[in-house]
Amino acid sequence: MQQPHISALQAKHADIEAQIADESQRPLPDMAIISRLKKEKLRVKEAIAGLH
Image 1 (cartoon, rainbow, N blue to C red):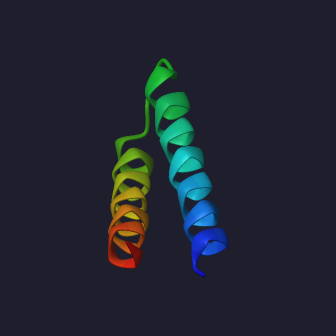
Image 2: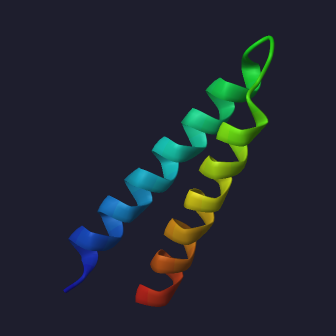
C-alpha cells in the first residue's frame, strides 16, 4: 500500500512544475533556479515510476 506515498510524490511533482512555470513567467527568469527545479522534478518522477 504505497498509494499515500505516490500521491504525495505526485503532489510534489505538480508543485515543482508550478514553481518552474512561475519562475519562467518572470521578466528575468533565473535559469539556475529553473535548472535545479527541473532536476528535482525529474528525481520525483523517477521515484514515482520506481513505485509503480
